[in-house]
Figure (cartoon, one colour):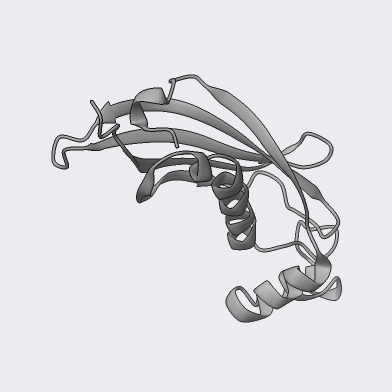
Length: 148
């Protein structure tokens, strides 16, 4: 288990290879984002999408899965404070393989919650062609080393 003190600003990591599944995309869209272009190829007519694209919110969920598996599971994560920036510069399509890039941008100890550190991170997802498909900046709470 790593604590706030071990996080290095500027630290960068790439992780994961998550293949987007069409059945999962349709299931997610039908439950949470039932816009026509997330439900069928025919629904993309008159849109900028080439074919059925997955919801940006599902893209965020995939990023979160990769972030938990490859970063948060290794540190004393105490939750998140919110998202400061979120962009989807390119669509994600079923069959795409996504990779997460994590960068620790800033860190500071919490003034209101002793024993917690705040870490601002950049989370970016790239497809198999190394094209940016999601760009997010978020702040999380990481526990400080109790032995210090």
